[in-house]
Image 1 (tube, rainbow, N blue to C red):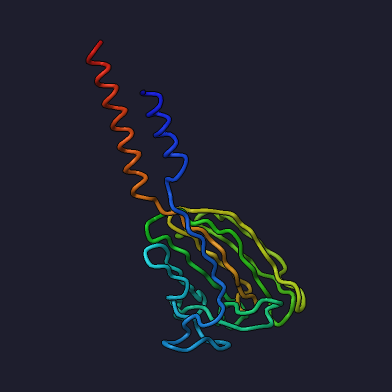
Image 2 (image 1 turned 180 degrees about the vertical axis):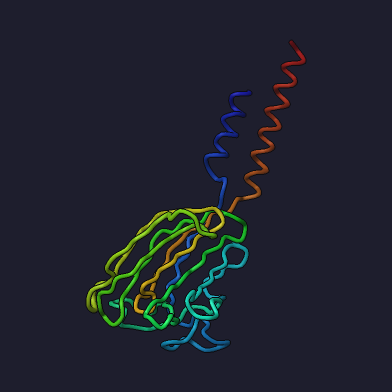
Length: 217
């Protein structure tokens, strides 16, 4: 009996201990650039885009402008073969720009960045730096420095497969003005309360069996 309960508890830990949901930021269609309007080239997207109630909060930041809480801008085409990208509309006067997407799990769950695409304006090849970290910074979980895009047919695709509890920052800079992001696919794993209740019940039953056996010795 004790072995069977132990196996049950271990099984609950190894399977079903979390609910996972997968999402993709495509930046297509109406992404709430205004109260009722679809986006036009150069308009800033609203911070509500990508949010899923109770699961994830997505925010975008232009980190070089004088007001870093500004969101990123949207553009329809010519970032190689991507359609509908976001990019940093700011700059420091010397051609530098820095963009960030924050993906935050609202219940502190594990966020995994599965894949993302980048394209270069205008159907060009441009150098950029891409860094993915846990929210708050720290050692890079993924990084890339080099060329993005080629002509009107080839964008750059990455599959980082990196994770962090609580969420991730995706940063790209030098340049984030002429390099835009699209198709950001990520998974959020949120603890399932019912599963933990079953696990605790199993452990409690196992403890009860052990106490009864000790009393009969």
